[in-house]
Image 1 (cartoon, each protein chain N blue to C red):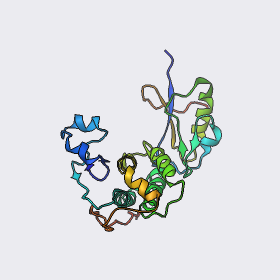
Image 2 (cartoon, one colour):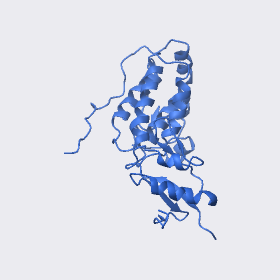
Image 3 (cartoon, rainbow over the protein chains, first blue to last red):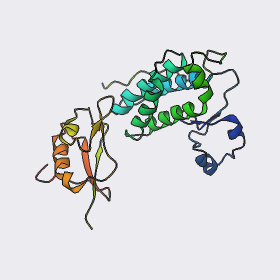
Length: 159
Length: 79
């Protein structure tokens, strides 16, 4: 279950199903209400592919202001896409862990923190899928991402 | 009680010139994309002079020095 919207936190379904929807309980579970959106990933969907899709969209939504975010989020999204479509190399997961901690808290806003938290939670919750992908296969049967994203907008250029 | 000082960076200004990391390698490292990584801990007294020089050297004035109370320290004669 994705708790708190696209910059939220993945929680395992059995655990999330027992969790009261309060700020306190979510905080204790390492999540937050965020944008106030919950999304359940159906069976047959790959959580890594889904998160790569979200991270790619979120990376494109950066404000173009702060170096670590402008450079870091596309790098994180690309690494996660590589992992999702199994074109990763042996260092991809280590890079993802390093980069998600590297962008956290280093910007004028908390957009990078949200993306980093989303990706870290995916690596935690989708551990079985991660093991599959590292072994070269995926048990997901639906290649199309489920969660909708608006078309990427162009960068606002100064007049 | 002596004041503690911390560095922070105005990310909207920082363009990764890295004069700061050049002048204050004891405290400032560089991330994978060429932007400075600052320590969260206070600046040790013996590096305060170098920290002021690093702030003065930043070509886009992105590096800032704050006291423990969060007050921005205005540049002294040393910059």
